[in-house]
Image (tube, one colour):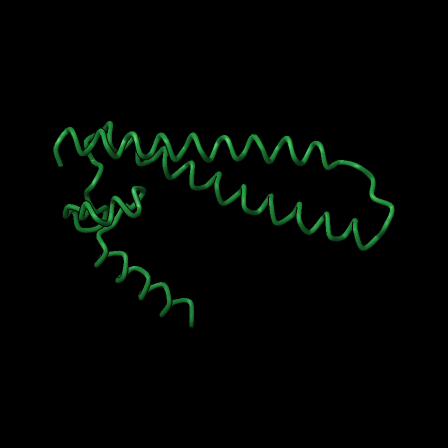
Length: 121
């Protein structure tokens, strides 16, 4: 992968991270604002369910930010774009679709098949 391609992915990752961080800040503001006491039990339950769903979504995004940071470190270390299992280059199409990918498509499919087999035990 050449320097221009690496810079493209670095910018894409940084933009994605900034977007996630902005959404996270909006969620925190929303949760602080929604701290009102709702007298109706059904409304309160609905609000708590919405709040729990939002927190779960933010937790997933927090983990995604961690993966983005890891991908940015791999760019800095010269390891970005190579499969962590086989060492082969990951296709640019795969990286464009999933810039945090750490495995080639073939290695990922093999990994997922192995997980399914062991999960069924």
